[in-house]
Image (cartoon, rainbow, N blue to C red; front, top):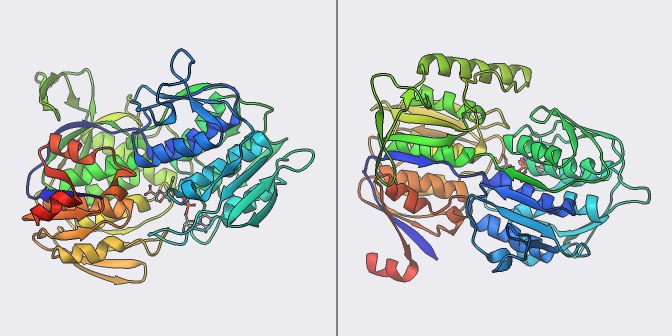
Amino acid sequence: MDSFVIEGGERLSGRVRVNGSKNAALPMLAVALMTDGDVTLRDVPALADIRNMLRLLGTLGVSRVNEQGQAEEGGLDAPWDASGIRLRVTNPEASHATYDIVKTMRASICTLGPMLAKRGEARVSMPGGCAIGDRPVDLHLRGLAALGAQITQTSGDIIARVPKGGLVGTTVFLGGPFGSTVLGTANVMCAAALAKGRTIIECAACEPEIVDLANLLNAMGAKITNAGSPRLIIDGVERLSGVDYAVIPDRIEAGTLVMAAAMTNGELYLDNYPSDCLLAMNYVLESAGVRIVPIRAGERAGGATGLATSTGTAATGIVEASPLATIAARNRASLLSMITGSSDPTLGADGDDPMRQTVRVTCDRVLRPVEVTTQPHPGYPTDLQAQLVSMLCLADGNSVITEKIFPDRFLHVAELLRMGAKINRVGATVVINGVRRLKGAPVMASDLRASAGLVLAGLAAEGTTIVNRVYHLDRGYERLEDRLRGLGARVERVNEKELTSVD
Ligand code: EPU
């Protein structure tokens, strides 16, 4: 098992590109099951979860092919880069997602809807809970059953079958005790895309990853409207074609990098930054004293700006685009979309693609405390809660964070206490009394985003922090240590044996 050894206190500076989104790519890869054509996905991050999904798809009869349409050398395990992964179904008979892979990754459940819709039958091992909570799948099953799927459970597997006459569109409510469900919405949307007639999903997840999935399906010939709103409308079609599609940037990786800059009093330029789906985070961080300013390419005001890159310094003609006006427009858009539930893409846009901007991140010397509640999109995302808790450990005053999606997602708290943080937890709320500095310590990563929070704490802390079990981190961040090192951090990946000598 690998660990990170971090010598804290280095100011991060430079330029880095946000990778493609893990949580958008995972259900999109499963969509390869829904067509006889080739599905090419670009900007898929090279992460452990993506490799697991590819392995799973391999067991379900999906193969990798190269640009020439021939079998990819190395098969599903072959490396890939941002230029793409091309998938083709070569055995449409397989339909069993077995426990040995599903147990490694809960997102395996998103093969259920696609496989059911295209193959008429799907058997998927029931994902269990994980470090962040119980994570039931009742809403997924409720939605598929409403379309007519016959669902049974045996030996820990969910078995879903299309009835005689096929799946039929209907109105289905996907709300649960914690709001909608992201992957449940993905499953029902995929199944409905090939059902007969119209399906309306009420209380659909509005996450940008759902919008991206709907865009992918539409590019394949589906008829989906209103994605991004809680009332999703799907008119079923008979078949879907192949597609070539670029995944949206990862809003959670982007947010993590912003907070890394803030906690080290750094200055970062982030390319491929999805401003349009980070409005809540931008608002919270700006309240805390972090400045995230969009940059417009191609303009010159007072000469070219030399930007430090993660590999050196590049002269570019990049200047800041009237920051206050842009932020005001974005906040207006954020507020409007929270109030109206609409996500008008023109609001707050400043001429660039608001999902792929360049931003400059800096912060005030003293961070201010804030009160935040995690919510479904467009609220503050649960996947950025641990990182925010770490950041607010260094704010000047008391912050309050309430977790409304996964009420037990606080495994990072006990580890931060080992680093000198002052945090009190009552149920799903933590009160953070800011301290002047954190102190390096050995800590244990327990889930993906908790690990990210601990790495951020280590970057800002005095002395050496060892974050153990970073395999959790590798599920969602591509070679994070290399990227952070390129920005000036002192962080090394070591395996357990090497660590004995570090101790
Ligand atoms: N829920 C139910 N019943 C269901 C499904 C969910 O009660 O059938 C509850 C969950 O227990 C939770 C809430 O509804 O309290 C939301 O869960 P959701 O189903 O939306 O989560 P998910 O789709 O399994 C995705 C992301 C998570 C992210 C959540 C919430 C992927 C692969 N995973 O999970 O990402 O936290 O949405 O936004 O897209 C991560 O990347 O670290 C991660 C955990």
